[in-house]
Image: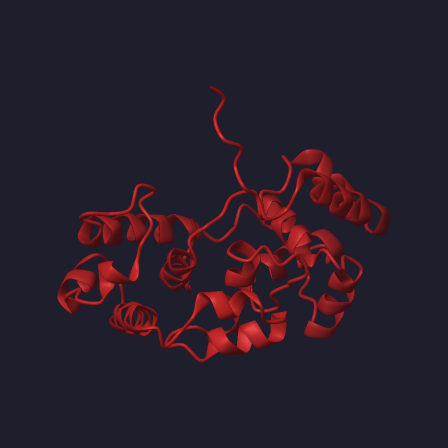
Length: 222
């Protein structure tokens, strides 16, 4: 018996259309799309709570450091984990602060993970409602959670909801990529950066993915 097909949020036809659009609008994107494998945004369903947790862990860290700390946190809390090894609210609602700190989390990140877990566990925060919001409303709802700023909310929209037109102005990897590929490494201001990103609409998330590939600086969220 053949395995069941993997459910995706972005079909192969949708991704191909996005890449054709980007290649037409931007010579740099055309080159990146030819250089790197196809974008994986929306190609697997990620658990929403898990994405929030990994986003918080990744804040202000290199990809390597985030991977290391995430593995330590998983070892500390994932007893009785789900089959895919995803974090769930139950892993954190009663987690001892000292155990999370020993895994490498800051005091703040440890508090945030427990706080969000309790809000989700109690039903005060609903991922189902979030899926039906427009981008800015969803970002605002996430930003209201402890430890979730705009960057983390934008990463969530890209990777958990597969929203295809997000560009995170606050992401260092993306800013460095735009500076290097469009301005010989010299720093561009916000207005100039947004003007470059505007040419990628309505697929700025896909363009961001290729910029991360070029910079080898993609956030670790799965």
